[in-house]
Image 1 (spheres, helix red, strand yellow):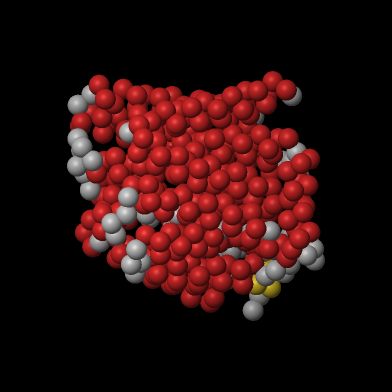
Image 2 (cartoon, helix red, strand yellow):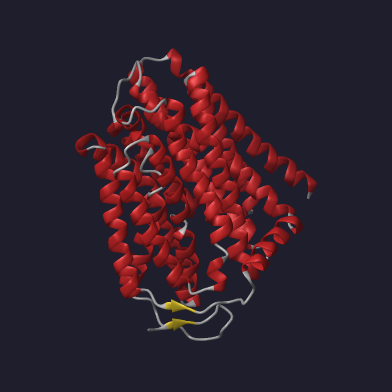
Length: 403
């Protein structure tokens, strides 16, 4: 079995076969897709297992919270142990959690498996540094970009597939099919992914302690995590409540309609290269302000929805989703550019801290979005998303003024 040496070892690496790049991209996409399968199905899922809107809203909340927790407490292990073994273990557990979700007899069971799905879906955050380690220096950007495209497509297609799949075959079939797809990835990774050598001998406590030290020492890291977390609140509030809102009057639409809204996530994939080029030319700080501002405007225009006929409201929601998806993804790419420039030797841990902030925001947005929908209806969700995006813009503007 080929063993990949540490990133500091000076070796000439052969070109990666296309099959291995495709495997990494597919594995990243399927793992992160697991975070979003539930969202378009919440309307039919809640009715089937007799759960209230508030309880069913905890399904995406715990999934996102589990992901944030997993990034914080599990991602550092990739520096200490063979990353291949970590990916294999997480993938196997993810497949089991998805399978158990498909056979959940009640909401309590589903909430428990949702937390495990979030924890184990963090294999995506192990796959990306694995791709960077495997890639030859001259092609690292291209290969990592390809894997990131797979991850973005997982986010994009997950809602579409689960929405249509739940309507055609039932929500349980979606979870079972997802489990089967991840199980196939386990076999492919076991056969095709080389081993990785540990890059540090620090104990687990020391690894976590070093992350705390990075957080204390770098204000730019804290600013990026706070701003991206605020944007994630609005993003998650919208997607976590969309299916429930569309299921009610005046739309009375099924999970397939909610899933179709996931096509608007294509803007996120388009934003990545555009934001990267603009960040190179004009600086990442400008991209963060533009992205946060675009997200705030896109959420705010949904205030016009009650004044419009139902079919026009749907068109407005699609346009708004394209706008805020583009803005939030562009801001994330710019924030990664900022964070990766802080300390090249600590990029994995810096990235983990950034994504922890982001997915804490995701979990908070899912919980607050469900609360807003229950208390004040869709206008409450729109208000939450708009205010949180304006908060992210304020963080970026105030942070830049202090420099």
